[in-house]
Length: 217
Ligand SMILES: [Zn+2]
Image 1 (tube, rainbow, N blue to C red):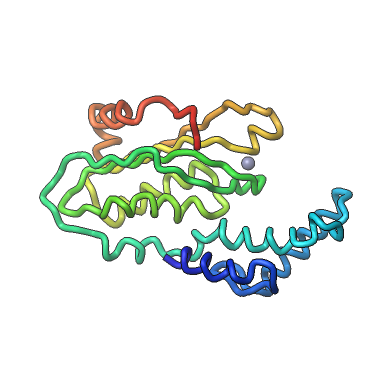
Image 2 (tube, rainbow, N blue to C red):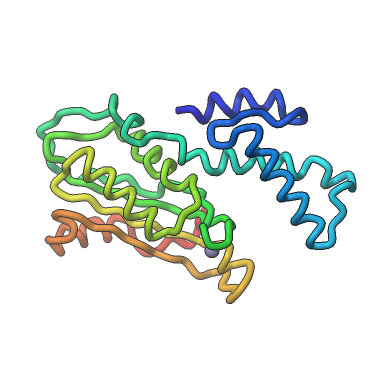
């Protein structure tokens, strides 16, 4: 994936000029950096003080990394990892860590994704499931849409007998501001095929993943 390659490379430029990245061109990073300088001034900070001197550039680079999901083609990511099988038992991957940004506040929301599907002739390499989650997490998101997108992609690519995605999220926009519900966790789910039609299949999966995780990291 583009990402590791990109990260290795930009480390060398950490303190220098802004460079083209996978999501943001150098010119776009300058726009972001200038906007951050404007915000710093607006909140009464001095962008010239030592601790803040490199902050606008750092923030611009951080967005390039945090939004990498826009530049990864999830279909291409999986193309070499689909295998034909006769297996048709439930495949479950639980506790996949994800880090995303809510599109309403541009603050992080983090948590765990749980994915299950029942293959019909095709399976995907297990290591690819966390990558699928990552592609949809590293964008400006809302948890409901991310949950649905993960399920849709698996549904389209594998044509399984069923797919289920449950996401448990902790939203900084709820924990740090507003209602300040630091312990509130949000659970969203997307169920297709056998998971939607058959309560027994659904409860097998739900029992496997257990209650909403209290520990997000
Ligand atoms: Zn939010």
